[in-house]
Length: 306
Image 1 (cartoon, rainbow, N blue to C red):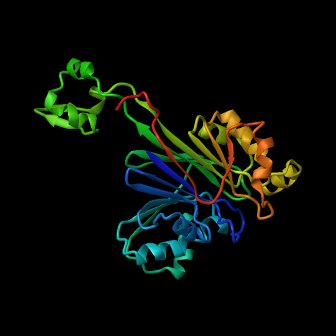
Image 2: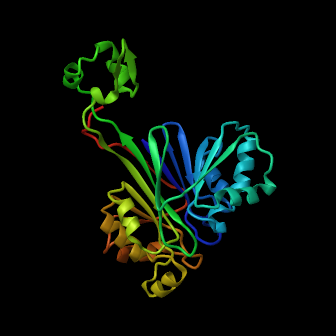
Image 3: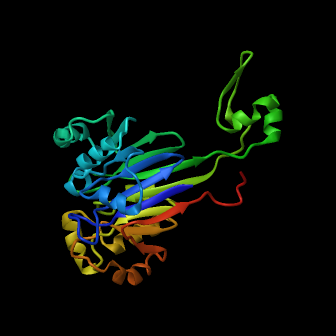
């Protein structure tokens, strides 16, 4: 199960009824946060989720509405007596930007590691899932992210017997362990069938529609995408400021064949996003207006066995 929460849905500035866009995911005891603008920890508090167990924070880019909440978040983690290291991922320049922000959060009881994205597409592997960054098109260097949870194949008795695996190792191999015994090495692949469909969430904001989004969001279970403007007549403004309209986001969702689209990163002037949803659904029917605190528990597909 993958827990997903859209903590905030605003762009540019927080509003009394709308925090800045940020996404938090929890899987197998691990927590990942994407973007951390002003007020993100308040949005997290309202949801009832804690910042203390966050293992990874990914940044799309270095505009203030996506990173200025970091110092407060770090201090809150420290005040909660966190000691585990924290990993930060973001575009080139991340180390310098974080150092500048930490002028007001200099002493922390945990280590911070910064990993800067070096390529147009780059994958970061963790325990049970990956975070895949892909470059998009904004007026500064900006990335989207796909968080993927892999799912191994079913245990195959026939395969285990064919490979002459001692029965006492079956359970450990099924759990992903590698066994060495009497000069022989037994791996999980020797007892498992073809990998099954996992889970995938793609997050993309502050960009024009570009092919890399369709490629990396392909068949996502959930696509969280910016819709800065609901009005079609604001297309030229979207192009000028390197943002998207609802209709452009829906077109990407359709092309990528995702299961569900949540719109986010609304302009402060956009007060009633739901008014534009009926027209947007003519392009992609499974479109929903993102709301602060909107969450879902994504489950592996049934019928695949244990």
